[in-house]
Length: 195
Length: 279
Image (cartoon, rainbow over all chains, first blue to last red; front, side):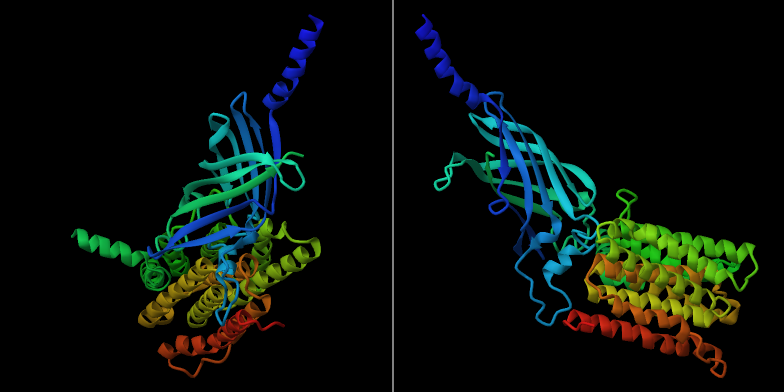
C-alpha cells in the first residue's frame, strides 16, 4: 500500500509541476514587433522595433496566461537610415512628433491578461496597447506556438508568431493619413526562456 | 453637389491648403472683421487655429507638447488682446510678457526635458526659455507698427515652419507655415485699410510665442539643430530697420524683405544641418 502511494506521488509530482503557471522571459534578440502599412495604396511598407523586453506566463491546466511587452519606440527601423542628400531618413521621420514622438513617449507597452487556448496552445491574446499616451484594446492571434528545450543550452523555451491590426488614428497618430494607411498590421515574432 | 463636397473635402485634406490658403483666408477675414472691435491682432491666431483644425491632430488627452503649444499660443493671443483693451503700453510690458511665456515654455516641454540627462535638460530648458522670452519681448516692441509686426509674424512663422519641415516634423512645419500665412492675410488687410489697422499685443505676442515654441519643438521633438533656429532671434531686430521713406503700401514688403534675411538664414542652416553639417 505504501509502495502504491509513493508510486502515485512520484507520478503526480511532474504532473503538478507541468500544471503550475510557467513564466518565460522574452529574449530581446529573438523578439521583434514588425509592422506593415500601405503606402499610397500601392505597396506594403514594413518596419520593426529593434529593442523590446518583457515576459509571458502560461498556465495550461487553468487555461490562463498573461503577457507584458515593452517596446523602445526609438528603436523603430525600416532600413531607410541613410540620408542620401535628403534632409531626413524615414527612420528619423518616424521618431518625430509626426509619428512615434519618441522624445515624449519613449516606450509603448502591450499588457494582456486574457488568453484563449486551443488545447494546450494559446491561440489569441487580448489586452491593452498603450501608444503615444493612449490606451486601447488590442487582440493578437497566435499563429505559431512551439515549446521545446533550446538545442544548445537545453533551457526550456517557448515562442512563435502572433499578428493583429490597429488603427493608428485611434492613438492620435494622424499624420499622412490616408497616403500612409490608417490601418497598421502587426506581426510579432517572439521567443522566451524559463529563468 | 456630392462631387463638389468630395472635391472640397479632398482639397481641405491637402497639406498645402491646410498650411497656406486656409490660414491665409482665415487671417484675412479675421483681420477685416475684428478690426471693427479693435481685435484685428487675433488674425494670426485665427489662421493658426484654422491649420490646427484642418490638420486635425488636436485633443486635450493626452496633452502632448505639440498640443500644449496650441494652448499656450491661444493663451498668448488672449492675454495680448486683454492687454490691448485694458492696459496702457509700458516699457516693462514686453519683458514681463516675455518672462511669463518663457516660463510657460517649460510647461510645454516638461515631458520631453524629463527624459534627458540633467545637464542636457538644464541647457535645453535655459535655451528654450531665453529664446521664447527674447522673441516675445522683442516682438511686443513692434506692437504700434502693423507693417513691422505683420512682417515679423510672417517671417517668424514661415522660418519656424520651413525649419521644422527640414528638421523632420511635417506637423510642426505645417503649424508654422499656417501661422506665417495668417500674418500674410493680416498684411493684405493692412494694404486695404492702411495704418488704421493695429497689430497690438495680440498679434505680436501670439506670433512670437507660437514661433518660438514651434521652432523649439522642432529641436526637441524632431532632429533640428538648435543652431539652425538661432537666426530667428534676429527677425524682430531686422523688423526695426528703417522704413520711413517707403510708401505705406511698400512698408510691409520692405519689412518682410528685412525679416526674411534671418529667416532664410535659419532655413539654410536647417537645410545644411540635414545634409550632415555640424557646428
